[in-house]
Amino acid sequence: SAVISQKPSRDICQRGTSLTIQCQVDSQVTMMFWYRQQPGQSLTLIATANQGSEATYESGFVIDKFPISRPNLTFSTLTVSNMSPEDSSIYLCSVEFMNTEAFFGQGTRLTVV
Amino acid sequence: KQEVTQIPAALSVPEGENLVLNCSFTDSAIYNLQWFRQDPGKGLTSLLLIQSSQREQTSGRLNASLDKSSGRSTLYIAASQPGDSATYLCAVGSGNTGKLIFGQGTTLQVKP
Image (cartoon, rainbow over all chains, first blue to last red; front, side, top):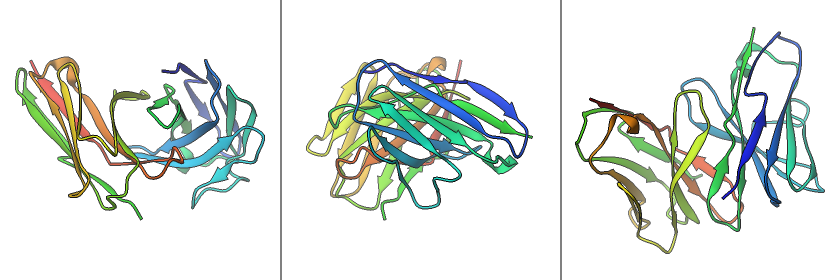
């Protein structure tokens, strides 16, 4: 299993600003994933972050809006840039071990006002 | 394109009842299927993982089955308790990319 810590757990931000979310894993993993959960909705994958390479974004998500860093095998950040109220969501970091279970952080609840 | 559907969207049962949550997927070529629990405003807790070669997995009062040919999975909860109240999410892994495609979830309320 894995223990995943996300920071911050929640934040209220002004529109037009940016927020960087941190994800720390207690063991080394190859792939880390960032998901978004809009209010009342299920989870949607934003991007896959591999160490040493650029993140791979899913359709509808772009690097300018959601830049991702992956400096090592235990850490990643997701930035939500130039925020608008439509960005209000829960953002979740996830990892998968050896093609087995996926584990999630506790999420970051973002409210943009 | 894989699509995952969960029925019902919401369910309310009295304590002690056995219940079944349903998950269906459109593409049977899945890598695995995982059931999660999400409490309000929180992250996801993994409940059960079923590999594509498996038919079912059990953990305590939970049993998950998988029928790839029909594109269905069920999560059976025995002797439900108020503490089981949460949203249950089904997620399909397509290929060994690690990406998961989620259903919309079933919100369960177990009344004392």
